[in-house]
Image (cartoon, rainbow, N blue to C red; front, side, top):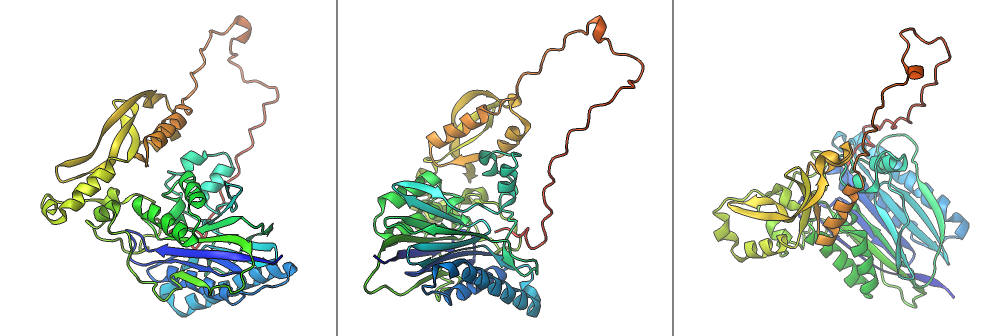
Length: 436
């Protein structure tokens, strides 16, 4: 029995960006996703160049050639980006993430670099296959922060590996995997998983049998959540080989319609986002994943202009929740943390018994800004996570016994060795600090 991929792909510029710097490719043998970064033009060039190089190997090689072929192709793309940056100084600092899966019979070769992700839905359970090459993931791996803290860390968009214009050898994660009929693969940029929960992604992958509908729904979820970044998905089912496979699908910066506008402007979040200008793409490479209401600034006169759109936007805002502090305690608010003219888009929903002053410093810093969630249950889970970070009570100091009375003379005995220092955070090069 021979197998192949059934596939679909979708991409959207999002509600804030001016250009799409993601790129996706899908065929019966090859799946690719790249998320570009670096300058107004560099990101889309980087992602499209990598996709173009990988498209050249869209074939069925021998299983033992999968990883060498993928690796050599990424190295060729790397050399291409270095040459382009050297020829055109405005492209300096360009780079891209990349995930690619190449099939050979029932074997899959996978390469990965950056923070785009591959998920596998098998037997109804979704598993993240790739490991993010980001600063916050490094801190999580070292035990410095929790996964929950990583979601809101100010450096969560800093990636530590990419394919860019620096001459250092690429650090690529490589693996061979089994292709099992019935598996569903998802490749996605952080524009999806940065604003849509894993649970919602899993539910969508299970419920939507049609791949095109599934890909479109995932993009729509990101748009409904504010889509502060480009969002791109590639979805593929492992199936018994087709007699007449469809042509490849190319989306995002590598596609002929790379400059098409977002399709999310009719949603409530889109209407809210439309009230303020789009950001200058990547002039500041450290862009936090914030929902669009964080930049809403509308005058009272806009009420007459947007009309019913405001009513829809307000109704949508009241389905949202966020966690912050109120009266010295952790509290849940209903709505979004913003005002439009005289209209407040949130109100206090409930105050918890968790004292802010009792939390560890990192937890207090976390709620210094609102932690937004799309449901009350998710907001209450945030509260539970914070409650688990209460500082232990300080031990009571007992007066020293005569034998324990400190001496006024220095000790001459051996001193305890200093505790080993923590492993230093690796220094990032200028190119590796680019963030989307």
